[in-house]
Length: 126
Image (tube, rainbow, N blue to C red; front, top):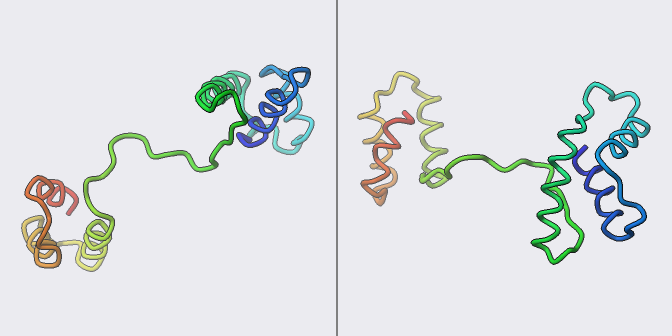
């Protein structure tokens, strides 16, 4: 329902007379999606989304905003290259009893240019 709330928000950005508050947006969502009443967001969730959209709009120079349907991953990004990560997953699926030291040796055999700082991370994933 984030995209529907973003669409209502954008209508309000384009035409000030069409601005809606969280309660009004929730009522519109209830009218449009009567069959999904249990999965509708609450007023406070809509308010949080409006705040996020307002901030994005201001950063965007007061223009229209869009909401991506996939939420970003929270936390630190993995230092492992995707191909190393995939190799480790495949290795562990093939042999779940592989020991960390043996697994690290296999990874280093396949990817010899892995930095020393990432080796402990590799051992903890095996």
